[in-house]
Length: 111
Length: 115
Image 1 (cartoon, each protein chain N blue to C red):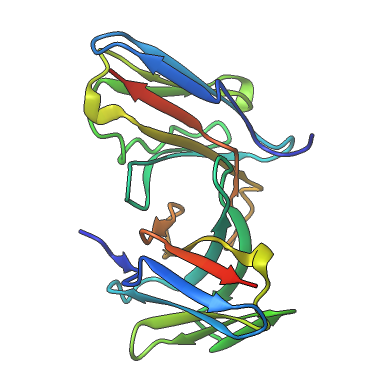
Image 2 (image 1 turned 90 degrees about the vertical axis):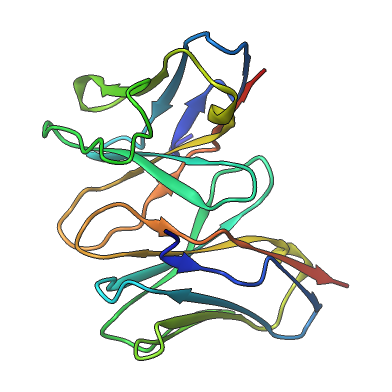
C-alpha cells in the first residue's frame, strides 16, 4: 500500500523557469517530510525537509510547502538549472524511523 | 571519503545462489538502514539497526533475507537462494541516531541482478 504518492513520473522545465514537484500522502501520522535528489548510479542525496509544525521551508533555490489538511507537499525550484535534472523522491516518516518513499519524479531542465 | 560506502557496486548472480552485500556507514552514526529499489518503484524499507539494540526486521520480504551489523559499524545483508524478483538496487543509509528527526545519508547502492 503506497502511503506516499508522486503522481507525475516525469516533468520537463525550461532553464530559468520554476519547477514544481508534487507529493501526496495518506498517513495522517506522518509528521516529517523530506525531499531527496538522485542522479543515475548514485544514492539519493538529502535536499530539504519540513516538519509538520511548519507550512514552508526555504533553502536557497529550493522551497518546500506543506498543506497538512490536504496531505500534500510540493517542492519548488526557482530558477531551475540544467544541473537540477535528476529523479526527486518525496519521503515521509512518523514516530518510527523508516522513511516511506514515493516512486519519484524525473525532472529534466532544458537549456 | 566520509560518506556511506557499499560494495560491490554491481553483482550478477544465478538464481539459487547466495549473495552478501556490504555497507560501511558514516563514522559515528549509530543508526543504519537497508532499503531496496526495484525497477520503477520507490525505496522499500528492509531493516534498521540502532546501536546495540535488536534490529527491526519488519521490512524483510522473506526469511531468505538476513542482515547483521558487527561492532556497531559495518553491516552485511545476505540473501539466500536468490530469486529473479530479488533483482533491485540495494541501498544502505546511516544517520546519527539522535532523538528526533534526522536525515538519512545514503550510499551509492549495490545493483543486484539475478539471472
